[in-house]
Image 1 (tube, rainbow, N blue to C red):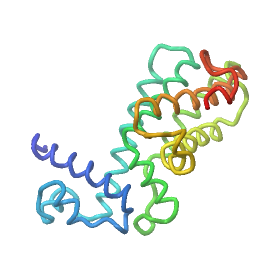
Image 2: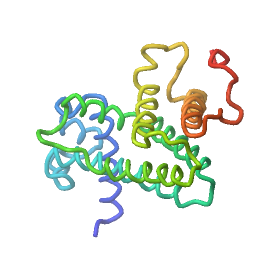
Image 3: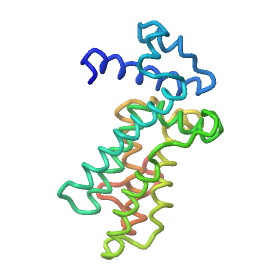
Length: 214
């Protein structure tokens, strides 16, 4: 059983590694840089993670674990299906805004920047949690018969775009992507799109026309 100090150091390593991997990618990240930022010797790093590949895997597993806990908590709460969808979208936006490096790591991985033969852990399980929830509501005729997986993947793509590419393509609109104002703007837009897809109706309080947001 790890001591509190060891747990703290491990979490610090994961946090620093996440930042480096998001910024420099797997192949561009050096373990000695992570160790220096954490404030430990490189040899000590191997006490927690025996290789860079193990550290890479642990970073992604940690992120997926946090996301899964949030999803399960929202789905288990007392709320209408539409309210749960809104909470899921808003919580996901908050996670991406707080940890943009995780999205960058996954984008880099999609371009081949990962350990050889590596497969991302847990995405199918997380996708099934949400798509099964949407499908159940569709069977009860609460939601429209849209492809649940296409919808969830679309949401992931939209949120990733807002926090990675949009600041480059439309900096005047995005501003600081980490600011509270930008985060709330992204939430409104994604919730609006999802609600229209699932119900054919605009979200309460949504702008009357797209032009109203510019």
